[in-house]
Image: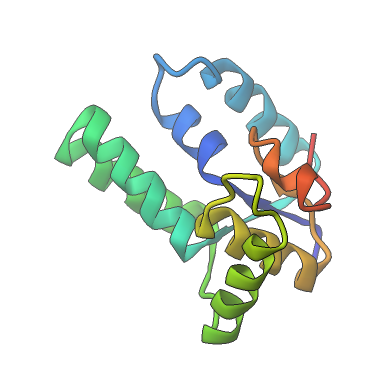
Length: 132
């Protein structure tokens, strides 16, 4: 499968026109579609992005955003072992503020050998290929 795993940043930027990365996310979505790539979204990222849209734009916007993501992407459900591996991964970088959201996404990316669509430098710190 030709795919990218999405991080919260680009998903949120696509939804919020005032976000500094909004135009970039729009351009990248066009490229994703042109390259016929599937977008995979880990459930923790789906939940985090929903929260950000809810707090920034309200209930209706968050529901519309979540429904759109559920229809247009493939949601990934990490296993308990993936969460444990993510915690172990964060422990390898005590000098960084790597969230479990990012670490779970990194674990899935490593397992699936896919790049992550992100604006967060922590993925490069963890040695995860970033899609550009």
